[in-house]
Amino acid sequence: MNMETSVESDLLINTVRRFVETEMFPHEEEVDRLGHVPEEIGRAIEAKSKELGLYACNLPEEVGGGGLSIAQMALIEREYGKTSHALQSWAARPTELLMACDAEQRERYLFPAVRGEKRELFALTEPDAGSDVMGMKTNARREGDDWILNGSKHFISGPCMPDFAIVFAATGVEETPRGPRKRVTAFLVDVGMAGFDCREGTRCVSYRGYKTFELHFDNVRLGPEQILGEEGRGLELSGKWLGMGRIWVGATCCGKAERILEMATDWAATRKQFGKPIGTFQATGFRLADGAMNLRAASLLVNDAVARAEKGVMSDADAAMVKVYCAEMLGKIADDAVQIFGGMGLMEEMPIQRFWRDSRLERIWDGTSEIQRHIITRSILRPLGA
Ligand SMILES: Cc1cc2nc3c(=O)[nH]c(=O)nc-3n(C[C@H](O)[C@H](O)[C@H](O)COP(=O)(O)OP(=O)(O)OC[C@H]3O[C@@H](n4cnc5c(N)ncnc54)[C@H](O)[C@@H]3O)c2cc1C
Image 1 (cartoon, helix red, strand yellow):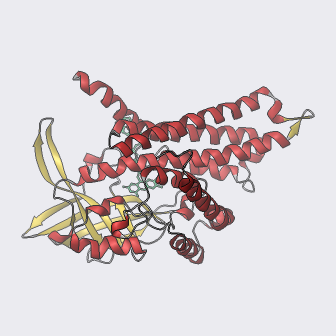
Image 2 (cartoon, rainbow, N blue to C red; image 1 turned 60 degrees about the horizontal axis):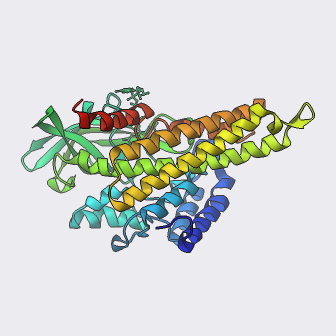
């Protein structure tokens, strides 16, 4: 699909842009100050996204989703990236992982998620296993046909209290050419099940109002019908989704950088010192020039990965490059914008400090910049046997 010229895509961008500008921008400051999204605001965004056909727009039409292409999803994520995750995540795009549901699971989890009746969490990270996913301690042991789940997860995020979680747990060890490896299985676990405690966790200074949850499992009994995909193949399942997730992060970063640059440009053109707009001082103007240049490069990198994904040839390294480049591009633009605003950049009454805080998270979640560089390095060295 040609993203520059398609009339359909122009319409889509305009629809999402108007939605974000009218239903989300006006609430950003209040949500940041309160540290939560008032229920009526969240529900209004949810309702509007359904009315516009944007709810679950990422999932195929055959399961009731919007059936948008990868390229269209990237355009949407760029627009959503201009606002806070705390607000835009109410217009849910349920995880594509749910497409692995079997017929019965589709009735219980996928279709309700598509209709907006249920919300899910993606629960991989643990207190002692962040970047080192294989260090996970959460485990499920077999008892007859059932599985007994124990352990805990943290930093598991969503806009509101979920209905169920996709939980990754070690279910044994297997031999591989690279030595023994944990078998990791994805389970669908309902909030409210005996032994499952899901509570709000520590508050984050990025995207204030977007919640993180702590999940604790104390001998939670799960039937075999709670396994998502195949036993022992949970990481393969999540890996496919994480790759696309990194492209969405890249697109989000581009949208946010665009909005920050607009604010910084406006300030540089109007704020005067020494009788001149500060943007005319080379030190300030070059920050804007570098920002524009780096945003263009990041956008092209997203488009390149999207084209590869649409052809079915996107690699883990392609996705990692997008994630690290776009997140770091955004970090630099946000930091430069604070500098351009001077002291005002750090004042609560100005939005720029909020964008600076929000931007910081993008280098951490969905795999830190360091982990993305590991993935890229591995793709370079492995073919040489190193
Ligand atoms: C707001 C928020 C929402 C989140 N949402 C979710 C969610 O919904 N689901 C979920 O599963 N997770 C979620 N996460 C977790 C997120 O993916 C992790 O925070 C991230 O993967 C990093 O793990 P960590 O925080 O434990 O850092 P650590 O792994 O402890 O890393 C700390 C530092 O050490 C560096 N480091 C670690 N290992 C290496 C290495 N081998 N080489 C070089 N440097 C290394 C890291 O890059 C980092 O700089 C969320 C996190 C946050 C903050």
